[in-house]
Amino acid sequence: MIELNEETKWILGRPLFECGPYAQRLRELGHDINFKAEDEQAHVIHFFLSKYEEHGENWRSYASSYLRS
Image (cartoon, rainbow, N blue to C red; front, side, top):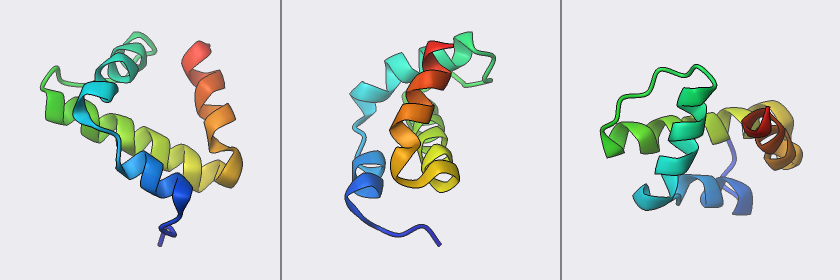
């Protein structure tokens, strides 16, 4: 189970309007994301949580590197 802490609260608290640009970049990188706002939000939050689960406190740098690739 993923711990609820400041990082995971930040991830889970991403508002819908902030997720669109991340979703678009993930599409450009080959992710299959529907254009429905709720799908974009779910995919972006899942992406961030996956990076958190894999890299812990350093998840942001790994997510940023991936998004810049």
